[in-house]
View 1 (spheres, rainbow, N blue to C red):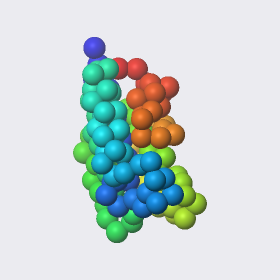
View 2: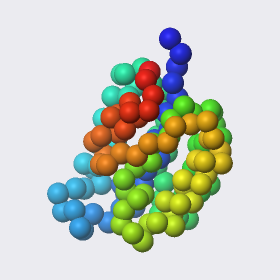
View 3: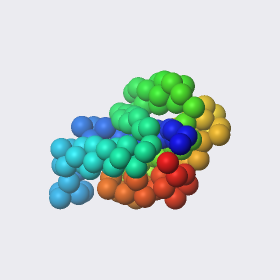
View 4: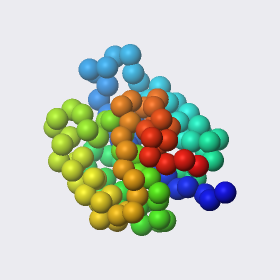
Length: 125
C-alpha cells in the first residue's frame, strides 16, 4: 500500500477572533483539528498539520511545510477563506501551494470537523 501524504493548512486557533462564533473557542477548534488529523492517520494517510498566524509568518511557515516533502493533497481550512478581509492571505497561501506542490490535489474543508471528508474527495489512502 502506497503512503499518501497530506498537508492540512489552517489558522492557529490561538490567533482567531471567535467573537462572531460564541459557540467556538480556541480549545474546541483545536480539539476538532486534532481529531481530524488523528482520523486521517487512522484512515492510512500520513498527515502534517500546518497552523499559521494571520500573516506575519504565515507564508514562511507554509513554504517550509510545503518544502518538507511531496504531498499528494493539501487541504486549506475554512478559516483562511472567511471572513473577506482574509482574502489576500488566502491568495498568498493558495499561490504557495500551487508553486511548491504542483502535483498535489487541493481541497477545502467547510469547518474544522470535515477535513477528512475533504481529503477523501480527492485521494484515497
